[in-house]
Length: 569
Image 1: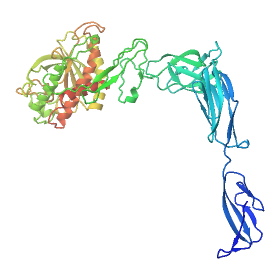
Image 2 (image 1 turned 180 degrees about the horizontal axis):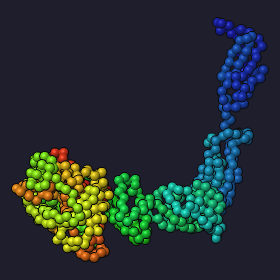
Image 3 (image 1 turned 120 degrees about the vertical axis):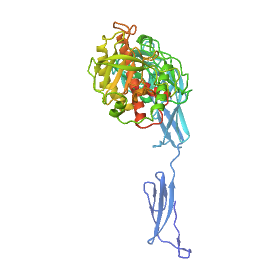
Image 4 (image 1 turned 90 degrees about the vertical axis):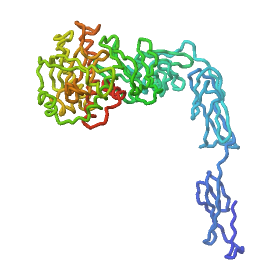
């Protein structure tokens, strides 16, 4: 009950007249004419007394009625595995009156036996017992749940799985019988990996293909559905990797790790060459990779070590071409030697003036400008043989003189065949194929990534062509080579081996007949293509350094590494 008293301006009590009572928020509390206040709902309001036009007020806080007791219905239940039971909880005050709007939380004593949702829906998981507890404002009640095994012989069945190809992260629909309508009671695995069930009925499950599936070739994967300890099985095609279909002779360059998380080469019975390049610069670092087949046993994990070849007198031993290629073997030591020979030659000759092709050739006693020859034309060449001592006076001194015939003239290349080659005159179609491929793709590729190999043409023969000389006179241990002596005019004292132009030299096949057994024309063409790209990259690098006045050529180990990259591009 509220009361009101009057006071003057000095605080002295004075008699009051009739008091009128009111409340600020009628939904929170009410007050009678006699001042009796009744709380209606939790909250805060004001009680106002009015006498003779003057008012006084007091703040009133109404607290909610506390929960005194919780009940759960039903108090117990027996369920078969996979079945569900809805529980309800009531919150009561001390007088047993129901209280609305109170928060109730649900927990299970053993979620492996029975789970409960935030709304009180119990799902039986496996045989055993569990206690489900409902709690509100520190008051709680329980329900005892007994789970029995699913009836024997009632195993789920799988009728169909869609779509036709499953991929990680995709949604799959499984239709059949014997599923639980409670998604939590359905356990699904794909290829042995748990797959979350996002929707369920007794005849259909919606499942997400797990993203944690290991990388593997496309294959028929086992799909299993387990309900109440009973399992049904089916199969569906699973594709984890990203398929890359390559035509014969095609290639794929991957530069980002994200592109290679799982790459699949899907051609049936296909043969591929896989090259892994490690660009780290610490010798102990490795780049791990794994190859696996759909039928054959998985190839063991391999690692590509960092190869940093320092400039040294005795570099690593021989690198052989694959035996099945049956082409000529090539020595890394010999290839390193020719790069060092080019460095030495450049150091000796770079100070020579570059007056232009016409004057330089005239000074060397050669025609003022080279003309582009026609097929069938012959010419004498000097093929550098190097020496065992690499110094500024020997790199361009030793040579073999040969006569070669033009077998192809293209837009960017001229191909010459040594008339003394074992198959001389029988290889024209192969040389034509090689020249056409160079003009159409190889020249463009090398130029785009490593520079124009004809950048020095204005200072040499000015014929706008690169010359490829195929001869048995290539030093043993090399499939092909470039020597920087050719970028300077012939000099009988310092540079007698020069042919003065953009040249490289390569081996010829030695075995008549087709096929890839022995050093046949077919084997030669397959292996020589990479040699062409490789050596032309060296020409581009040498020419760029010469044209821009570099004090030296690139370190040989790095120059060779970049030429290997040119092969892959």
